[in-house]
Length: 510
Image 1 (cartoon, rainbow, N blue to C red):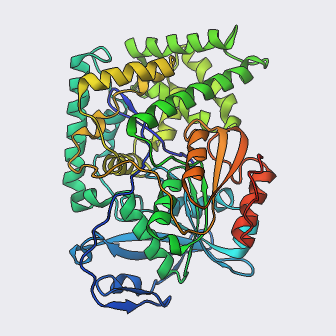
Image 2: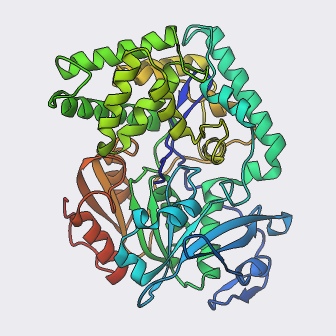
């Protein structure tokens, strides 16, 4: 995960909670051409040889690291159709080197380049840094790589924080959402061009194999968090014989539908909110009174209040229910942030929007001067829109919204109608949501946290069961992802696997 592990995006008047998954779609490549050997001794089609045989030119960059750019086909089915740039950064192994360890922080849309460059100690242990070159990269569409681009900052403000005069769920409200979604999609298509249709996870997984090869590794060693688990699992399905040591932490279930993701996450965040309140009410400095149910009712009333009558922040922006929900969810990713969540709730209940806006801005990557630190929102939308099937039937959306609200009575209504975001996207998902088995792959470690709100534990259980060689490592606790931020049991299991190849005989139940 990144500093902001993105699992959802607020829209003009609705929150769309979807994680970037993709089914096992048949990938039709051109008729094979005569194969050519690469520097790692592999045989590849002649059309791909210029990419697989490229020599990376590294230069020194910040924090005593090295940076470079690799080239990949824009369209893997037509390698001659153009190229995309892939930005990489590495910290060389400090000791007896085993090879490269590629790291993805999640999203989709999270920058692995920034994650490693600025937070390598958060991403990996000293033991891993001794034995591996730690390599961060931005997937296609993201950050320093060839990137999706849609809106200028002022437009992004309106898209993320804009309010509707219509009542939530009405025809007029839905029409405003559709107009906002269509305008955003058109801007993305205009500014991004053909890349917008080529940012799917299947293509990113093929890029991952290319990076493996040009880094000089015969097998992929990989640490993926959150959405990065889906990218890693997709790689294993496409290239089972190239799987080295893969750790998938905060796992996604690749067979889940868009609606199943949203409803499961709604329940996950609802449960995380209850866990926060249980802890808060047991302390002496909690802004809530009574029972957990009483506090949940207070939060529900607070969301309804700002939905009807937004609070104006010092900078003139207005705090509505969508921005407040973003501000609530942001600190639920880690239990260490719960005291900050209490401070935020207290300030909003006293009529101040500034603290909540700061949290929402932190999640959305908005800087204090109104600029945006990265393109993570745009990349998130673009990748999800081509990785999922979306429903444009309003009656079905209303039925699903009612079901989500029943599952998560406090926050569910603000997480519905997410399909509108992508129903009119210029590039549609083609395929089925299917399980990933990666038949023939070496053992793969799947890490799950029992009360992870963003990637609920059941997804880790499901992925570990689907993978023919999956081994589950459970962390009993709160928060999103576990490696290098939970306990020594998890860290030792992951490090022993990545360094020595030791696979736990059974789930250690950390």
